[in-house]
Length: 272
Ligand SMILES: [Zn+2]
Image 1 (spheres, helix red, strand yellow):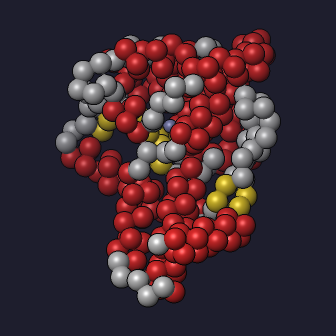
Image 2 (cartoon, rainbow, N blue to C red):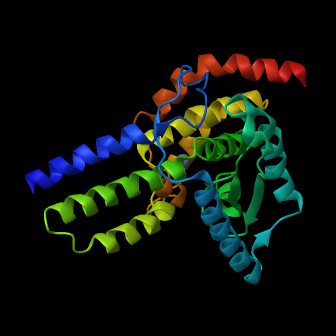
């Protein structure tokens, strides 16, 4: 096992060296630099897969009469998204041309998520139960858009694929390759359902904070949002927290970034 673990580590290192890049330029909120990412699969593959999943989700919701694509509540959230979209170019110019899309699903669940390429889902539960202000909606929207901009799903799939390959190749070399195929298949499934890493969450917080501020939304709402989220008890808390693991230092990191993003907010307000 020791040799296998060692071989896996060597392979993983080789893969890391081969597929590392950054999907965006750095954010002001995070201090300007962008973390290097493992990107083994193509963005097209990931977007295709995400689009399929989005279509399935929306078809199901429509059949249940829960898909909201117009009306006052949808307009409110969509207005926030439309105000943030022009500012994605700050991080990567190509994303300004992505077909960003919002659907609202009329369910009690306190959740929101994004799929690769800017396919955003909000549930009415998160808006109503947390009594979100527009600024707080912008905090969630910015956070979700940031996951897409940083291509966290692609990175997650790449990490999973790298692990599978290391196990498969390491196993084959040592004559213990059985089960490698199943592992490879499992990796793909996990990629869509697995929560993002804490590191990705922190990144999404900071890039999202900056997006909201640039769009003219008060970035301090990110603090009240997470406070509301923490207060929402019952049934193990909001499902948003299960897909968005809360790190203990989340609040501290947001507070720490505030002096860097507040000037952007003031500038955006002055231009309005
Ligand atoms: Zn997140």
